[in-house]
Length: 578
Image 1 (cartoon, rainbow, N blue to C red):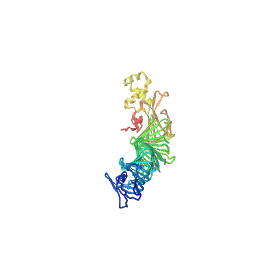
Image 2: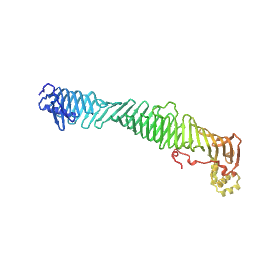
Image 3: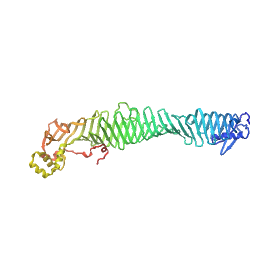
Image 4: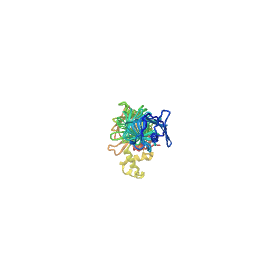
């Protein structure tokens, strides 16, 4: 039966857009043609939903579409209390499904708008599929564009699988597959996901995105590229509105120079250029071969600083060796992960409290330390000690000048002292200790060639110590000069004093101990032994036979041996001395 070809106006209420054509179908099934105005509407109730057909230019049955199928033509509008559908024409079927064609527009109140060329709705599954060259899904400031869209009303899901693009106020996001939960207001994207922001680009395989908060959540390898740096993680999130992010699972930040910042967790605020890093922190400076480590670190790009604590460790890598330095807190200046650092700007490194360092040919400890690349000087404060080979150097403060990453000059200020354990004297003492005193007294009467052994034993028995194993240099201020990281000359300035062993020409026996006092002197050292002295003022020097050496005279004032405090391995720099 053909309906009158006149304007028909309908109104209805419905829970979801699919039911509206179901009701239209039932209206025509009653073999009626309803004419109306805005005050005369047709309503059909199906289940709990009431559908109103708001408007259509004409309506008719069409058996070519199937038994009971109906057609609405011209300015079609259907609505319920939350959803409206507009199209040029529509087909409805007895199985509660319908199709809409031409300028399709489905609008859910205060939620979203869908635009396409055609729409198919299944009233049983409550799933709508939209087709078109350019399908658009609009929600507040977010626009989704794709070619095939599926909307599952029952579970509040909008999804695509042929590629889509989402644009909001700041971001453009593309992916092959996408799902949008209209109830939870959360998007899920898969395969070739790319988020483009004016300041950076995010690429990953899997992403969740909260449009209201403009926050992206990553799962799997994720790469974030900007003009300043590169970021990587395998799990994390990025708030694109406030420009901060947090990363887990193998995260790192790398700048264009190749410097990298790593840790188990990284928090970073791009607007402030500020970050916090937790657990297994590592800042790698490829330019200066420096690595800064710790279990907690703070990075401030605006002030170009880096602070590390909790097992903090600084590594200075050389060609054949590496300096390991530990302190409670390590602080670096002129460090940038965004390449804002001016080229050639020298770094400043500071270490605070319980500072120790280890290198194969150099060890040390102090309370606080600084190293400035500008003058290549390492400054040590509060009870500093440096060990170089067999030499122990102490003073109130020290300045170690480096040249070509090697020790050049050590400037020691106030209460300067150098002590070295004489290996030959120590060996003789050990030999004497293995022989009893009575045996030695008997052998002394028979063999006068072992007089030097006896003198050492007598000294040890009388004074009860191995103090005579140490050569000593003392003065107010000193400068030590190095070649190949070994001390070869010492300039003592003010109240200079020295005690050192004098050996026979073949270095097999000890002649005695030389003591010299002078205002200023220069001491030359070969193979860690005093080779010669140059007195710059009138000296007072005496060579004592070993039998005449007394402990009070053999130890210079202020002598202390800190051998137990010396770090002999990398692990020792984390040891706290009592």
